[in-house]
Image 1 (cartoon, rainbow, N blue to C red):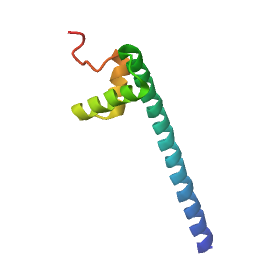
Image 2: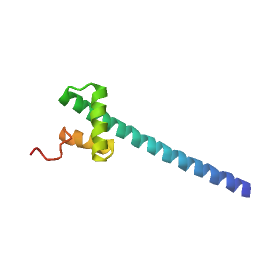
Image 3: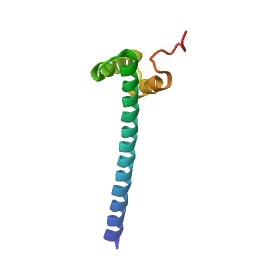
Image 4: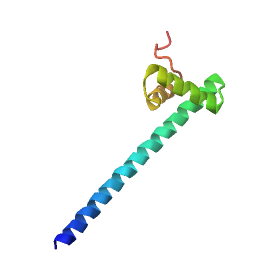
Length: 87
């Protein structure tokens, strides 16, 4: 009986771990898509190549010490890196 309970507990832990992994992968996919959108905006507004747009985004992220995904959201919302609100 104890071995059966142990096996059930192990199975439940593994299922829980896999569910967490799946959720993590879904979050990563959503983030990747949002970064891709920001890259597209940068490419359109600056006439940059995909590699140049990535360089712009990643360099600005490092300069501001914020995550690329956070900066990507700003670009999606405002169309730019500028946080001055158009001043």
